[in-house]
Amino acid sequence: MGLGPWANVVPVTSPSMRRSSLEPAPLAALAPDLVVEVLDTTTSTNAVAAARARDGAPEGLVVVAEHQTAARGRLDRTWESPPRSSAVFSMVLRPTVPLASWPWLPLLTGHALGKALRTEGYDVGVKWPNDLLIGDKKIAGILIERVETPDGPAAVVGVGINASLTEAELPVPTATSLAIESGVEPDRTALLVTLLRSLREAYDAWQVGGEEATTRLRASYAAACVTIGRDVRVELPGGAALTGRATGVDPGGRLIVTGPDGETAVGAGDVVHVRATDR
Picture (spheres, rainbow, N blue to C red):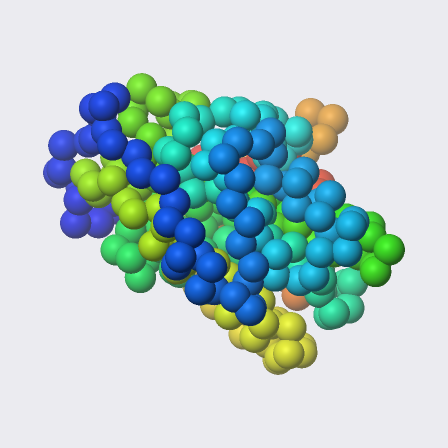
């Protein structure tokens, strides 16, 4: 997968890069579909959004942070990035689809946000289930948690996108940022507005579309997923590994890996890591 039109641009690495605060007016204009709460500093937007959900927050509440001090990912990994360097938010959703369809929400989120970033000119692909990549490097992480509330189960959709991180600020060598890839610091407010609208529109269509919408999502996701068609090594809990070719996703959103023993479907909850082996 190429890096698009910016492949030969000198990366942005200046530590003195100006990082603007979010502008409240464009975010407030997302109401009533989305109500955005902007925090200057918090440990984790997912933790705050989960607490709001337990207190009765309606679907569409979004918690945004200028600075997270203990962002969380899969397997309880934590990290911290400089203030105003990322687009970080958590959205409270209260799906009415059958619980059996909930595993599609992580894939829907990655697909919708990847599509939105591509419309902004970034050559983004989705690695199953929902990591966003440019080339082989991770641009964003997504963590979705189910929260039990007095009003029934809610989903907290947490997203962190590396916006203006420099090479020196990246948490791991396998990460990148929008600024590094394009040579331009993105407008985080405009970026958040685009991402939030796209995610809410995709979610609403999935909610009301029934099985037909899930079938369309499955086909669309499979077409955009850079994992499918690759030889992969799937690291499973307990140290076991599954190797083979990723050939698709099943009706439940699980990754289908075809190996010497035939097809195996693995769910996100059963996987530690999926790594391409044919590069």
